[in-house]
Length: 117
Image (cartoon, rainbow, N blue to C red; front, side, top):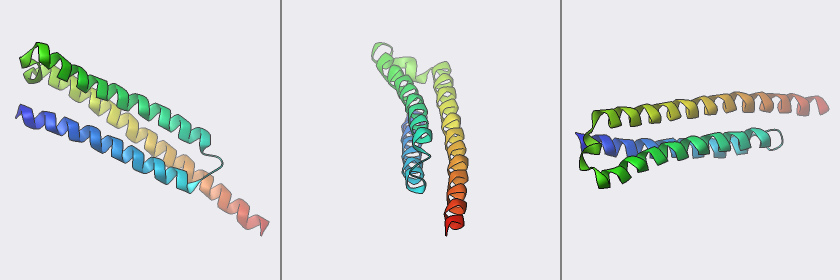
């Protein structure tokens, strides 16, 4: 069961990175002018969370070399799960916030272009 848990952690990290990359591409396609600052903030914040969660995972793997039982310690498993859940929640909130801002800018851009015609 422990091996299954650690495989799911790796998949969890991969899915998080893929979903952020997917939204990042969609966000860039939707607006070109106004979202530069928003996209930069999004990239910075999500990069920090991904780096922290990846470093937490790598720390456990590194410590496994000195203590073989660390990957079976329930406190390590719970702590890493909480870290990854918090980063996943933060990334989802960032994606949701950026979707709202992008749709707002798209509506304003559409209204502005239709008034000029």
